[in-house]
Image (cartoon, rainbow, N blue to C red; front, side, top):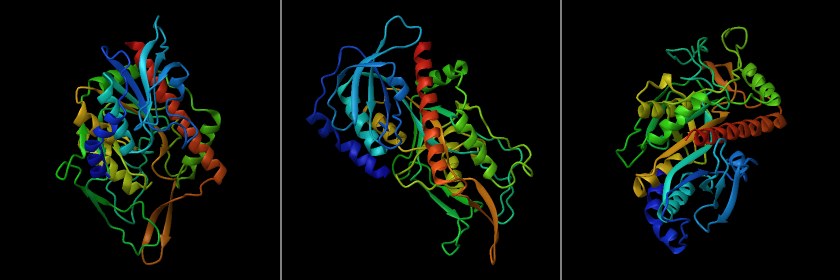
Length: 377
């Protein structure tokens, strides 16, 4: 998909030019707040809480974006509202690249704030104690669990479709062993850009602002479902004594995101691959970082790197769901002990409710961080 993004971003100038947008106050720079999902997928637009403080003055006709509005954003502590661009790109790296390319071509953007949701690690560095040996994995009693709503603020992102991983499991194995060791390599720019470390100035300021931001408590129904999620993992609460359901979001300053395609593989091997790329970007061991996985950031980064490197961006990604289902330990004749995912740990209605709750909670937190940052300016 990375190659497709490169091709489309390079070619879409003609698309944007064919539908020229009259820039609002073209003589002055204007900040943009952007996101992917207008609510068609989740029911909760990713700018929902920001839009409650926004008065649209004009809708701009940008064919390569889902919706673009210019208007006034009320910010706490400010006597006058801010003029901003609010835009939805649509889901996926290609959609994000096309929308950003059109906006930076036609508008005089000061910076881009991109709040949004992400699938992420339930446990920093993965849940298994090190070293991992197939058939002998145990849960790490000292692991740091992450609450839904935990947020990564960064300008660094990696295309997870780059590189290659080799694992111990074979196609003949009837269940996916979550303990299978993955050896990954290739998160580099040998075959075209895979890693993006853009201007950090904006992300640093947003990260600093989170120090005084107080996250809302997890809603009661969501807390109940989170308790059930963690309880469903084998060993909790008896054999993994330190594991308690995390309830307060963590805010990461030294982090990075990874962008995947529409086909997402929720698994610990994918989590390890993701953390390998994140560790490369932030200069840390994969065991020290969480995976934060989205579907747009490398498209945004590619468009900015090619078209407007002077426009800083801050990705504010809130954890809306875990990157794997609760774990269980099983035995298989001829193979031995394995770890699998319990995809049916709750009734279907509960699973759907938990997904929506996590999405809305992450949207609320990331939107509030944006508003909190703007109030600090």
